[in-house]
Length: 97
Image 1 (tube, rainbow, N blue to C red):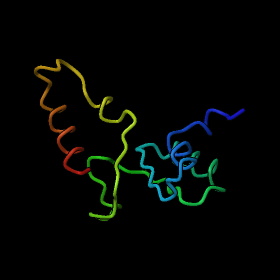
Image 2: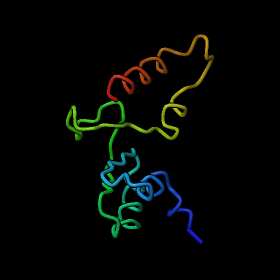
Image 3: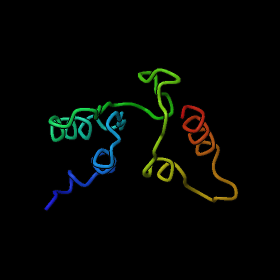
Image 4: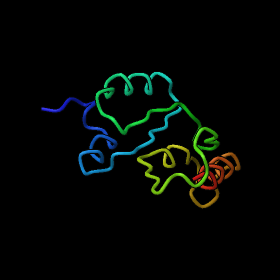
């Protein structure tokens, strides 16, 4: 039986053949834990970063971007008239992707 840390999207995608993945998270604790847990799986790179400003990823080097909840977590307030900070953060994220 797989542990919870083994049932992650990158691990599932890796099992389907996606071997060159960059996994970005704002939490250094998460990145450290995932890096250690999956150190035996080549092709997975775990980095700390802000999806609104991914300076550590060179433009034009990513073929597919997969979001498993980051954008959803940025959205708050009314969906018809979100606060300015929500509009700013989501625009920066989408522009960066």
